[in-house]
Image (tube, rainbow, N blue to C red; front, side, top):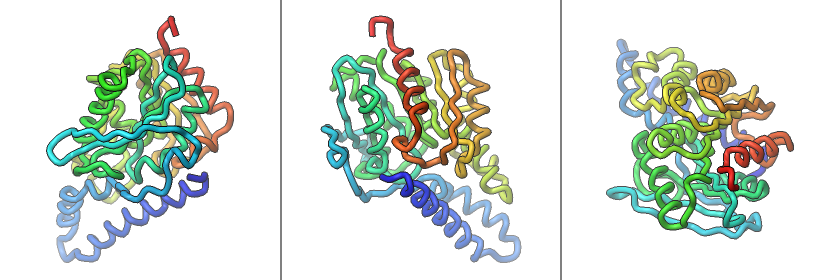
Length: 292
């Protein structure tokens, strides 16, 4: 996906969000504010998850050899994904994507990991892409756990060489999974402190903190992590304000690193400058076991 395509895709998601809200608003009568709050509470997942089942590309289009996988994770729920290997003894980076699209929008992340000399994995949560099921907070975390177990048990990945790379909503998923399945290191890119925090900023006319059933409270989890953490956030981020990244970095325990960028939320990782790539490469390699 080209750099210019990411803002367009993001704008389309934002339009869909507001269309849903305006449709609800259009049905209101006297006392309708309570109705609005009730509708948002009941249907809030439609304002959070924007899966897409259309695949416009795959790693082969970028000259990357890849393996695909499909895992059963529960009744009528599956997880699908792609693996791109670089070298047997190289670090592994598991990517957790954001709330919209599918893994075909994340091929550039596989290109990035391959360019840096890492083995890369991307996967679709339940309900996204070709994965079956309905997305939920607990479901997405269970999906991530299933992929980690697949990597370790089926592909023989050394957990001491596994790094989580969570982007936007995916940062919340990766952080939640890290409580029970800790990685060697964690990268949080464009990640919010919590869903209630972000919802309160996006919808100031609603009691969003009270209405939010979904939490993904990374700010509460990050204080307990003792593995290395790299926080990446764009100053001009139009989706998750820069302050969220700053706050997560402040709350994290050392060893930690903060990398501010001048790129927007959905800019392709291949469009970042060499400092971005060098920072990720150095961070991942420095987190590896001594024998690496």
